[in-house]
Amino acid sequence: MAVGRSNGRAPPRPGAYGDLRGAASPAKAKPFSAGISHTPAPPPPVPQVKRGNPSQNPHLLAQWRYMSPETRITPEVRYHLDLKGYHVQRRAFPESTLETLERSLLDLEAGAPSGLPPTCPSTWTPAVNEMRLFNLVDCGEPFEELIDHPAILDWVREFVPGPQRLTEAYSITRGRGIGLPLHRIQSARYYLTGEGPRCDHLTAVVFLSDCGPEDGPMVVFEGTHKLMAPFPYNRVHPDWDPPAHDRGFIDSFMERGEGRGDAVAWEDIPGYRELHVRRGDLIVFVQSLWHGAKDLRSDRVRRSLYYSYSPYHFANWHGVTFSDELKARVTPLRRRLLSGPFIGSRYAGIDTRDIPDCDEFPVQPESELGPRPIVAPHEEEIPSFDRFLEAASMRYSTGAREAAGRDGRCHLRLHGERGGDWSVEFQNGSMSVERRVRPGADTWIETSVEDLVRLVQGQADVAQVFYNGRVTVRGDMGLAMRLASLLVSGSR
Image (tube, rainbow, N blue to C red):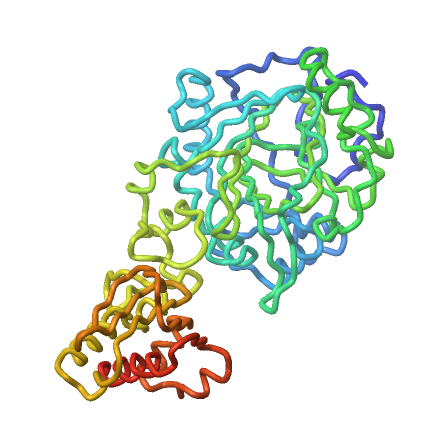
């Protein structure tokens, strides 16, 4: 089909969308560019649906049921999202909020790209006739207000494991052309816990314009957020004719297999649902749900805002960072949602002032001993062997009975860290010690530092260590015993 023409399919059945279809598509599409000025068409009247009227479509009745922002998540609503992967909350925002948001967004679009704040990147999607503005929360108070808006935050607290944080906030402004291919986020897990269903990536979509069948509505495939099997269908609607521009991107997209699959019309795929919404409606969905957007065939420009939330260890999307100025001026709750990502404990030496004070991020206290060098156990527990030799030498020189006996030289070799070679010489009633190898030793003693210290300190029996082969003695055994006796008595 040609972009902007009817696809030949039957029009929506009467009552499927009420009066939201708007006027027929014009013959000529209006150009879409940065700075486009678009005056929204007058909103169609709200369908008058009486609750409990059996003549009304029950599904339509559920869709149009009013839910104020203060309404908590009911068991029925929780069941709906768990079953289908999304929920539509009607009239979630008052008109005053929508007018402020739309006016702020139009001002940003008019300045794109060069006139945008430095913290607000912009992009024009290839093939699809749309522009996106990222990091809207850094672009003024109207967008900040949505960070913790009750209509959104209730859903976040209900379905996203805490603590939660905002991971993206951007706009999509789309004009006439093909839609958005089907996709989902692979890392957006949806799973069941003891406290109920949870998801790792929840997105809230705020609609600033009506979006009916001709206005490029969001398309979802109900229940696919739990799908484990590969999606077997074409991600691109088979009726779309690709535009003449951006051919390189389109060819690459097709070559990667992104556009291939069973060429079944989306409308014929099980679970297909078009989400027709009014200005001020909110769509909340989990990003593991297969979704996309139909082609836009009307004269409208479709504007919507996307705020996504994840557990606190998830990073921001696309490398966007929230400015320090933003976090300094917002409320404590918003600062908590903007801070991070973070995982682990809060240490005194690391700046974690904006990280939530919660059990998931415990404070790691400093030791009462304070800063100190940390040494290996043997360095801390085993005294220096030189100290034992000094004590033995002093005892020998003072005329202890161990001095009796002939002169001689004893070579002592100790293995292990802090080990080495010592030469101990008994001569003329004195004992000298040198830390080196001297030839002509009368006795050789070899052992480890640990074993000798245990012997000297009386923690091991000499005979037992000797017969276990942990001490080797060669030469004059009497000279070896004299040295051992001096060491043991000198250490006490």
